[in-house]
Amino acid sequence: MTPDETEDRLRRALARDLDAGFAEVVRVHGDVVHSVARALTARAADAEDLAAESLLRAYRALRGYDAGRVAALAVRPWLLTIVRNAARNAARDASRRPAPPPAFDPVEPASEIAGPAQEALRADDRRQLTAALAALPETQRSAVVLRHVVGLPTAEVAQVLGCAGGTAKSHVSRGLRRLRTLLTEPADTGAAQRVSVSGRSAP
Image (cartoon, one colour):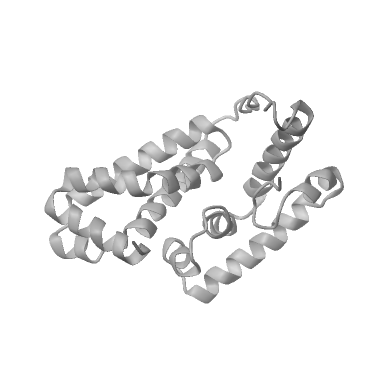
């Protein structure tokens, strides 16, 4: 089934029965919602909260939509726009509160296949990549995450960012250039060699 066919099926499901249709939306797009939430937050627990809040906002919004608005809905970019907006609101609220002590997710147990040393390097790379993404301007961070972490086509990235396709490409390009600069600064030289330009850790 093509992405367009999937979107059409979801719209029809929502039109028939909101609760059952939304459950199908979560089944189909829940993973991408969580992936974007994880890339836009520092900790897994924060990502879970962001994803849950975003899905709740989406459901509440749908309850107020008429049939015509549901029929015109681009479900995936609409959902990810909600995630982005919720992340921005959370960041704004956090900036108004006193900063807590630094918190880091625990490192996952080392894989017997990769070996403890390799796993430690990968965990360090993930932390450095997360920090580098967090240092990008919000629009560039969102653009890079949507295009190169989640893999959305540029047209959908533009929908989520609320801009033209060419502008979305520019945000992605500038974000990647800045990301490369951050990852190749002297303190991060080792990590830069192990992180691909797509924003994922190289094997």
